[in-house]
Image: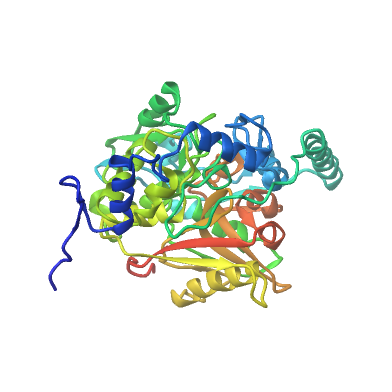
Length: 487
C-alpha cells in the first residue's frame, strides 16, 4: 500500500501528512493581514485566559486550583490532602527490624545493558562475608511498635496533616471558576492552566532547572566482591529504585484483608521526581514504561540502552513524534513543550511510543454511564490482568504484563498491580513519581521477610475508590507487546 502524499503549504515548501499541523503552520507562519492567527497566543489572550480562569488579573503561574506544597510542588486543591498523606507514607520506616542468623545477604548480581547491577541497587552492597551466604537462607522478620504507640503517632500525624490543609484551604479558597467565554470552533485550541498546569504559558523553564533535568539525578558507584571473586560495580541513581515489585508481592501476601493480588512484570523501575523539579510526572511515568521495555527486552528495547532518557531528551522525542505526524494536535494544544514546564499527558506518551514503532493502545473512562467511572476503571484493570493468564497458584498472581500509564486530571501515575479485597473492593497498586521510595521499602529490596504491619508499607502504593471517586475521567495507555510468561 503506497504511503499517502503529504499535504503542501500553498505559500512555501512546508509539507506534512496532518491537516491540523498544516493549518497550524499556515496560520502562524503566513497570517492574514487583517489580524493575528487564532493559534498565536498573544499577551492579550494570556491576560484574557487569566481573567476567565482565575478572576485575578496577571495571575500567571499560581492558578487558584493549585496549591504549592512545602516540597515545592504544585498540586490540585482536591489532591492536596492525599498529597500530604503520601508524604507521610514515603517517610515510613520500621526501626525494629530483626534479621535471623545471616539473613541480610543480597541476591547475586546480574548484568543489564552492559553494566553490573543488583536486585538491591538502592541498598549498600553486601560485604564479601555476607555475599557467601546461600540465597535460600535469606529472610527478615519485621515487627511494629506497640498498638498504643502506633495509635498516638499516627493520630498526631493525621492532626498535623488536617491542620495544614485547613490553614491553606480556608484563607485561600479560590472563587468559583467562571464558565469559559471561548467561542466554539472546529479547530483545536490552545489549552490553559487547567490542563497544562501553573506554567501553561511559560516559554522557557529556568536555566538551573533545565541543567538539573538534562544532567539527571546524582549517580554513585560502589565496588564490591562477587561470589566468583570478581570485582563488581553497582550504580545507584538517586531518584530510581528497582526490584520493588517482589517486595510488594510479599507485603500483599502477608496482608490478611486481601483475597487476590495481580502484579505486572517485575522489571519496572520506580522513578521519582528530583527536588523542586515541578510537574514532570508525565515524563517520569514514560521513564517507568521505558524501564520495563529496556529491562524486560520488550518491543522497542533497542531504542533504550544505558540510562533512561532524561526529561529534556523526552521533550525532544515527543516534538520529533509530532514532526513525524503522530498526535500532532498535541503541538497545537500545548503550543510546544520543548524547554518548558507544561504538563503532558496520554497523547504525548502515545505519540512518542508510536514514533518508535512500539505498539500501544489508549483507553478513556468518562463519567455519565450507569456504573460509576471509578468502578469501570477498576474493572478494566482487573480484566487486563485476567487476560494476561496469570498464574493462580496462591494469593499473589505474578504476570509478565507491562505496567500501564495512568492519567487523571492534574496528575499521572504508573499502574503496576491490582488488589482485590475480601470485601470485594479493589485497589490500584501504583508507582507515583511525586514521591520517593521509602526507607522502609529500600531496606527490604532483595530479601525475604515477614512483617506484622504490611499495610503501613503498602500505603504509598495504594489508590482506592475513595481517592478515585474525586475524578470524573481517567485515561490508561497500555503497551500491546509483552515478553514471555514468567515461570
